[in-house]
Length: 269
Image (tube, rainbow, N blue to C red; front, top):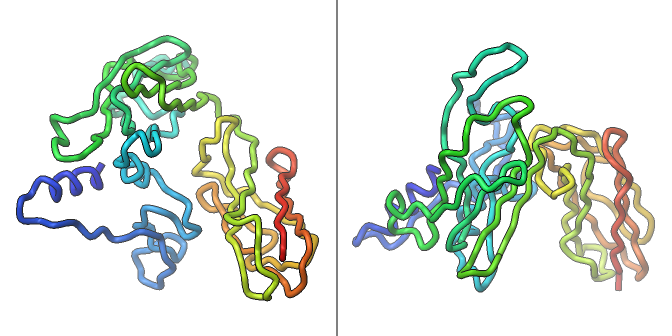
């Protein structure tokens, strides 16, 4: 929300032409204010994978270009205060609203299949942002067995433009493997990023995952990066570098703690 406050202030000041944010990407550092030797201030991580704040910037584009709908939550037990049947007591945690970054006109919040509210952008707090965040309140006290799946629906006009689902369960056994480019030049230097992500069945990143992943490569290319590798914040990145002869490259990944292996095909020409 700090990003939203600063952007709103910059856009609302008549003598300010823009704002410079530090920084776009996390970076390695030997400074004492680090997390495992990494400065964590980036909107994206070391592997250029977007973090939560990136959704605010993404949501400022017009929905006709790309609809955006992203809740700023893991949606797991403990995110809100409520009754804990295990201790037979009311937890006194925070009662902050559910924050959603979106460029939709309005959103609908459903919990366990039940509509809990319909919300408009928070223009009173962020009057200068093209598309302010949504601050969803009054969702009820949730804890333990009462914690159910979250389903967000974004509308542009009367049409559904975007949806997001976040399961209440901690079960998440999906290992995503993607590459930025499926065609590389056979010059020995051309390369593409390989991104590994631990997600749930709906594609939501599991930010506490440190699963170990083993990659298998066949074809005229080499991996640049550790193999096996451990996820950090549910993500890991490597590079795939083309060789000097044409051919087909097959890259697969597997993890003992996650689901079946995933594979991608890259052409070298």
